[in-house]
Image (cartoon, rainbow, N blue to C red):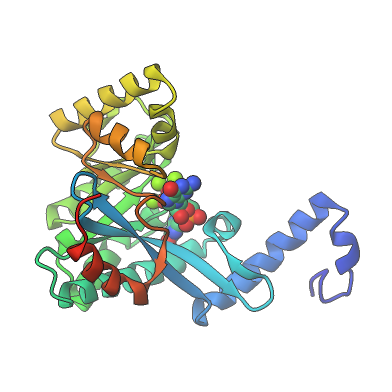
Length: 284
Ligand code: C2E
Ligand code: MG
Ligand code: MG
Ligand code: MG
């Protein structure tokens, strides 16, 4: 069926374009099977208050444990999932699993239970019944709407699309929060922030990196943060890897952050003990 099963594994290595094609169709077939198996899993990365270190939320990040290819990160298969349309059922599974996890954090008895932040691809967001799916999963999991954040990208908002706009408004009217992910990497007209029905801006890690290396970048981030504050939006700085970067983010007015400095994405089983320890830990 595939080049691999035909025993042509050797040359696949030397024909990049062919390799890509074979790999694509192979990936796609395997991904279809993975949805129904237990090969897809989520890891969770804490989102913390930069000043106190308190965990305010977790971002759910998709992984695929393939029997022979090993552990795959989304960068290796999300595109295939989007092109094949598989992102819709996969995304639905992600939402349900992430919301159930958030329910367990709530049950673990934190004073303020962390929210779960879920990446939603544009295609998934545009699919029929997306809002209904979210509403149904909220009811099924018993998670309060405020416990859920949906991360969308600028590309979703590029087209002037009434359907997208309407869906965002419906979700927010229910209390679900919406974050714009990787802000600053796409078509970021700042004025745009004023119009989008939005709650949180996730500042791309390129900005965080630039903060400590360039004055111009720092001024730019300060400008973005000032604007988002004026609009009552929260800012999460992504990809904080050093204490220096944490300080720089705080200095520009960012309130929240995420990155390897605090924690790498962890399996769900570790999240409850993380919360218990983070609770006791003194501020960094
Ligand atoms: P993202 O939403 O911007 O997620 C943050 C990515 O940065 C994650 O990569 C995370 O592991 C990584 N990261 C976190 N802290 C640091 C840091 O300090 N330094 C660096 N260099 N990287 C850091 P990951 O897990 O490989 O995910 C990549 C992308 O795949 C995500 O970027 C998101 O766009 C997409 N993705 C992940 N899960 C899903 C999903 O369930 N559905 C959809 N549609 N997309 C997903
Ligand atoms: Mg994200
Ligand atoms: Mg991001
Ligand atoms: Mg990113």
